[in-house]
Length: 137
Image (tube, rainbow, N blue to C red; front, side, top):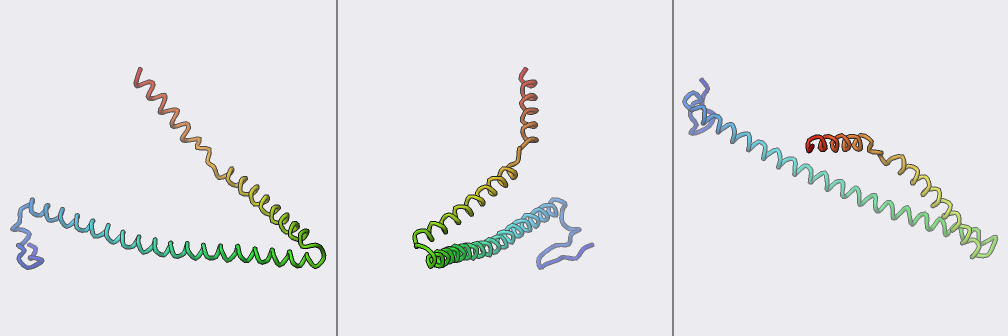
C-alpha cells in the first residue's frame, strides 16, 4: 500500500478508481498548462533576442551603406584631380550601375532556381480532381 503523499490525503488503496483517474487527469492538465506557460516565456525571450539581433543587422546595413557612399565620394574626388568633377561623378555612377546590374542578374537567376516547380502538388491535385469526378459520377 502507498502512504499518503500530502496533508489531508488518503491512502491510494482507500480511494476509488474514478478519484484516481480524476486526480491523474487534473495533474496532467496542470502539467500541460505549466509546460505551455514555460514555452511561452522561453519563446518570448528568444524573440526578444532575435529582435535585438535584427536591429543590430539593420544598424550594420546603414553603416555599410554610408561606408559605400563615402568611398564613392572619395573615388569621385580622386578622379576629379585628373578630370572635371562632373565626369568623375558620372564614372562612379556608371560603376555602381554595373554593380547593380550584375547583382540583379545573379539574384534573378538564383530566384528562378529557388522557385520550386511544385510538381508533386500538381500531380496530387490532379489525382484529387479525378477522385472527386469518380465519386460524383
